[in-house]
Length: 491
Ligand SMILES: C[S@@+](CC[C@H](N)C(=O)[O-])C[C@H]1O[C@@H](n2cnc3c(N)ncnc32)[C@H](O)[C@@H]1O
Image (tube, rainbow, N blue to C red; front, side):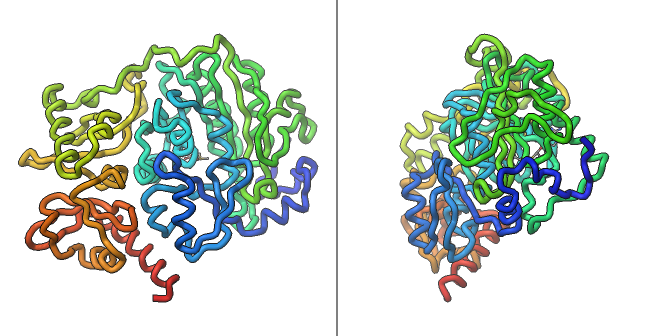
């Protein structure tokens, strides 16, 4: 197989079931599709809220909680619902991957190439915020985007790590591993008006060897009987069937045929004079015309051996203090009690909400999570870093007072029953403009701002007024949303 570097897709014509439909869909603008964050909102409630604003949507057949926008008064990313993490804009094709890995609540899942987190978030949602999802990526820049998405969507069961996946620690095994491999991205051509990306010969060689190494690593960190899903968003057999064919030759895995509930084509068994194992027909190819979306390749592998739950080896309960943190166990416990008291006393939280979460002290701040265990303490030191576990929830000042972060208030949302400044549209615009609202007698001290049932963040009420502590960048994004919404309403 000699692959052209000019990005031309003509060589795929013999593979594609309907070439004309493929070319036509590739040139057309891709419709906006979003997935509902089911752990945070009832799907019917979210759809009703969007309808009230003038959106028309329809479900994408075969994909639970995935909807296409048919009519929009403004982009769905400008809605308060998006802002509050109740939905994630995602290509329909990529929303096929997480369900195909079939994660179950309580599972330990590794997403080896996770940023910016569309599939991580989907996996975490399917786990119902239980178990543990380790979301790893090599790129620090892309991890920033991953964190932004995870915090906005309020995922509490995700541990983010930075490492070259080829050198990921092997001390703890996972029930399921996703390899959403770096690839030539031919399937994202609709974002470029139908033009596939040009590639250098060097990149083509690099990417296929990286894919091979990442998939072999994924197999090594999967428990016996566990599942591995290999995914790319490209059409090239060199990056798809050829990579899977090579590992089937000498790794302890078998290919499990995928039975997807959406239109797709089977994997191929020959291309340009090269043959692949017949079982590769059980892989899946999604072309742009299948879901009116992007391109995707998926192959699911089962690791040989007894089907047991993840071996306990290498996994341990998440401690109260991050390994190596300066605080003592007693100090950490005291800070947790202080944090719980603040949340209960100010916001009248139902104590049951706090019983469901764990705390982790790192660098003087408390992180909130629902991880039932983590692999970090079993990992030998190496070229990996732990970036975050759940999200940062409580901070402490020099006078020993604790303050909730904007993320935790947003996550608590409607569960905040006191100290909430409910804002109308005029007040939210004024808050975003000036950062200050007139004080309200019943709200002295810490407050949370809530607008259209969405918590915007923290503030403090004194005799001088209620001052916003919503960070400038966050407020600026919301201000832009308000501008767009007002324009759409003709104000
Ligand atoms: C297709 S994207 C992943 C998309 C992501 N899974 C999602 O659904 O949003 C591939 C990712 O692989 C990462 N990557 C590339 N080489 C890697 C490596 N050696 N180890 C880990 N991640 C790598 C890239 O930084 C990129 O974020």
